[in-house]
Length: 510
Image (cartoon, rainbow, N blue to C red; front, side):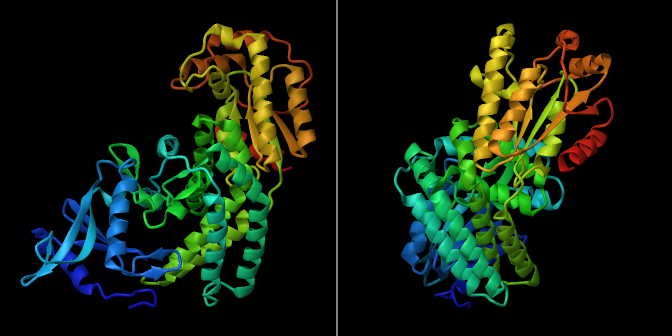
C-alpha cells in the first residue's frame, strides 16, 4: 500500500472486479485514480472511494466514505441526472461479500449508468475528434451550470484559493525528484504575489455573487458526450471549500486543460463563447485580472494530482512536469494588444478574428468582441435572432461601438488583450479605437479587409446560422459610403482564409 493508503480494500476491489458479481460473461474494466477505484461492469458503473488520507482529501473511515458517496450523488444530479443512480452498500455475511444489507456493511459505492467511456472529452481530444462545434456546446453547458449553481456569499472562496496555493506548493516541494526545488520556490513566490494582487478583486466578486457551489473539478476527463450534448459529471464531493469557488476559477480548469494539450483555438473559443452568453459580461471581463492566477493554480494542481497517481509511471511523471511548467508560463506577463478588424460585410472579419484570437496576448488569447453579437445583446436577443431595421440606425450603431470600446477598456485594464470585430466604416470609429489603445497602454494594430463587392454579396447571400444580419443589399449600400482615409493595414480578403491569417499575423507581430 502507498503512504497515503490507510486500509487494505483488495477484497472489495476483487469482488467488484469479478464478472460473476455482476452476472456477466465479459470482463470488468477497472480504472484507478488517487481517490477512487471505478469498475465498469456491463451497463453499470460502481465507484468506490479509496481508503486514503491526503491533506486535501480524507476518505480514511467507512463513515467518511459513505458521506462522500452520498455527497457525490447529490452534487452531480443537477448536471447529470440520468447518470447517477444511487449509493449502494457492500456487506459481508457468512457467504462472503454482496451488494445491499444483510450482513456487516464494509464499503459503499456510487452506482452510475454506464456511458461510452471513449466519448469523454479527453479521449476525443487524444484522437483529434474534439471539434470546435463541441466546444461551443460545452460553453453553453458550463454557463447553464454556473447559472443554477447556488451563490455563496462570504470570504470562503478567497481563503480557499490561498489554502490551495499553500497546500499545492507544499505537495510539489515534497517531491524534489520530480519538481526542482528552486523552480517550486520561484513558483510559490510568484503565485503568492499574484494572489495578493487578486485578493481584493476576488473578495469583491464574492460579494457580487460570483462565488458559487460549482463543479470544482471541471476538466475534459469529467465531461462526456451523450446524444450529442456534453454532460458534466464527477463534481467535487469531498470538500465544499474546494467546490465553492469563483465561477471563473471553475471555468479556468477547462481552459487550462485545453491550452496545455495544445488546443489553443479550442481554449480561446471556450473563453469567448462563455463571455458572449454569460449574464454579467462586465463583471466577468473585469474578473479576467485573476485569470493568470487561476490558470496557474489549476495547472499546479494537475501537476500535483498526476504525481499522486497510484501507479506513477513515466507518463504520469512527464504529465506532472509538463503541467508544472505550464503553471509557471501562465504567470508570465504577455504583451497587451488591441487589434481591430474592419471592412464591409462579407469580408470575413469574424472568421479572421476567430482564427487570430488564440495567438494574441496572454493565455488563452484575446477577448473577441463582435459587433453583431454585442448589438443583439444590447437588445436582449440571442446571437441568431434577427434585429429590426431600427437597430441599425446611426444612433444605435454609435451606441454599439461605444459599448464595444467600453468592454474592451475593461478587458485591457484587466491585462487581457482584445480583438474588436466590427465594420468601422466611419473615420471617427477608427480613430476612437486607436485612442482607446493609447489610453490603455496597449499596442494597436488596425486591419482593414478589402474584397470586390460582387464577392462580398455572394458570400453574404450564402450565409446561414450567423449572427450577422447583413444582406447583399446592405453590402451594396455600404460600398457606396465614403470611408475617408483608412490608415489601417489593408489586406486582400478575397482569397483563402489561411493566406489572410498569415498576412494578419505578420502585421500584428511585426
